[in-house]
Every structure is written in structure tokens, then in C-alpha cells.
Image 1 (cartoon, rainbow, N blue to C red):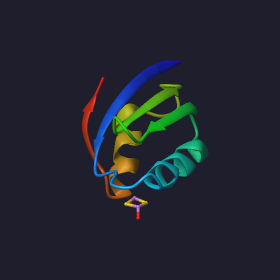
Image 2 (cartoon, rainbow, N blue to C red):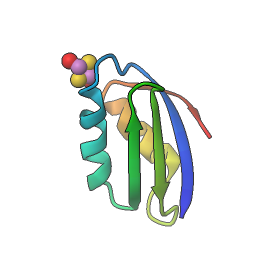
Image 3 (cartoon, rainbow, N blue to C red):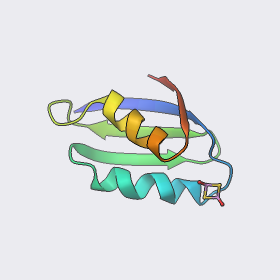
Image 4 (cartoon, rainbow, N blue to C red):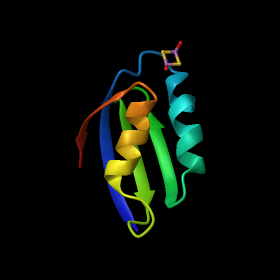
Length: 71
Ligand code: 9UX
């Protein structure tokens, strides 16, 4: 399993957390996700054999947020 933290921009109300978390939880390969409104971060645990950090970031950007860093 791989752990990454994404720094987002664009979460402007607390409901954004749910808008991001729901699709992440349905994404194959994502084992655990935690969206933190206050810091604007997404903590991820995922299987790199199934999904990449790039693919997850792209999916979040499709929702209208900007991923400013992946660490
Ligand atoms: Mo609030 Mo976020 O109306 O996409 S849910 S800004």
C-alpha cells in the first residue's frame, strides 16, 4: 500500500469533503481516504498496482478542485 497526501485548492465549504470522499471510496484500489476541510488535504492509502496518485488527482480535478501538490 502507498500513502500520499494531496494538497487541494478549491474546497470552499465543508460539504466539499463529501463530494470528494464519496467517489474516492468507490475508486478501485483506494483502500482508505480522508478529506480534511481545514487543511484542504486528502490523505490516501491505495494500491499502486491498481490505481495511481496521478489518476486519483485527475479524478479530483474532474470534480472541480485543483491538486497543488502530491507528497
Ligand atoms: Mo459547497 Mo463544495 O456549496 O464543491 S460543496 S463549495
